[in-house]
Amino acid sequence: MHFMVFANYNEELTPQRPRDDFAAYVRDRGRHPDVDLLHGGTTLDDDGETVNGLLLVVEAPSLGAARAFVAESPYGQAGLLADADVRPWNWMTGRPG
Image (cartoon, rainbow, N blue to C red):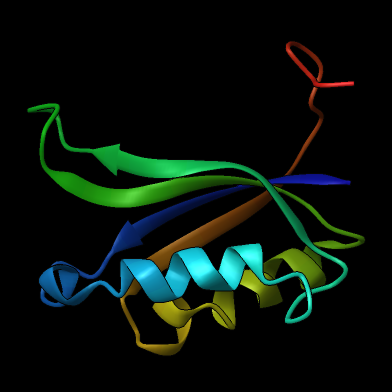
């Protein structure tokens, strides 16, 4: 099942984002063997330049597994996410495979 993750960074901690740690986490299937990151990237403020959060597309066996993937990430563990909305997604257009 596919899920969309819409997360906003905690503005007070944004400069401290451990991007390398997060990138290593999402690529390390051993840490989350049942969840696969398919797409992801940062979201921007209206100015088109200021990073304010992230958007992920993940494949996971359940909503709980997708939420745990986010919560257990370096961003989640460090409190860098002000909020994270994880929603089931019916991927129809542009789906690979």
